[in-house]
Image (cartoon, rainbow, N blue to C red; front, side):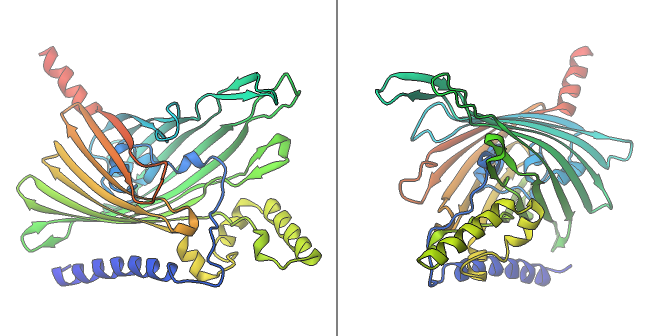
Length: 405
């Protein structure tokens, strides 16, 4: 591969992303706010500081402890034999002070060929304390709703450059409560899901420098629906398609810069809107039929319908593609500076923000921090912090070995 071909390939990929944005922003006859709604929306929150600081990027970046969320197939290319990471994110701090996301992830390389890995993660999203009152303002009950997910993955190298991985996940959403005043009983909802992911990486020579070019994909949360209130209310889980590429090149000895691009699309059908149907009794009936069909739709059918059920056609499909671009500067695998931008179309949620962050690494431990600055006005996501603490098991073994000597 030569320099000319590499530049052309990167230019084509970036131009395609720009074209998606331009077409999605064109005015349509029904240019209305129409986001995709799912259950367990907390599954879409990036758990770690590294990926968040680059604008929510991770499909094709170098593997780390938190690859379970971004692309579990990357673990097969992990540099260390094992690692454990803990992440903490105070959430929506501009509105409340008791909502947070906590995440624990770890992996273990197994086998003599250094080509397989097992990994797992546990994430817990607390929605804080909610106080219910009666009509007179008297206290009724206090609840602490939460959502959690536990998963395990297996990844394997299929060649020196390509790996694949699968993950199985259990999801639980407890948003209900039991009221002794009304006798209402709302139970939590459970679901099972799976991920299918792939990662391709190689090292082209550009001039006299060895670079790294990686591609990754992850179809995550393919699974059952959530059922609330004994099956009366159902919700799709956030099945998502993530595609990404990363190009890393040396700036000088011990100095490396990586440029990344991720595209994301929810593979969930859009809930019908009454405004998309004619006025009158016939329109009411057509809307009710469409809504019932949406409720009865299977998750697998919903994946394919997510590309064809848009009132505004292909332009609305493009609006549902979220774009992330990010940079990571690396000094000798010890000091990191990161930045990125995440963009979601205004009609699909309007999450738009810059991410910034830094990381410091020793032989045993690494600390990463990220800070989010929203560009959309009055965004509750503005000024969001994330922290990740990672422990390298190889470094720990080396440290213990030195002490024994």
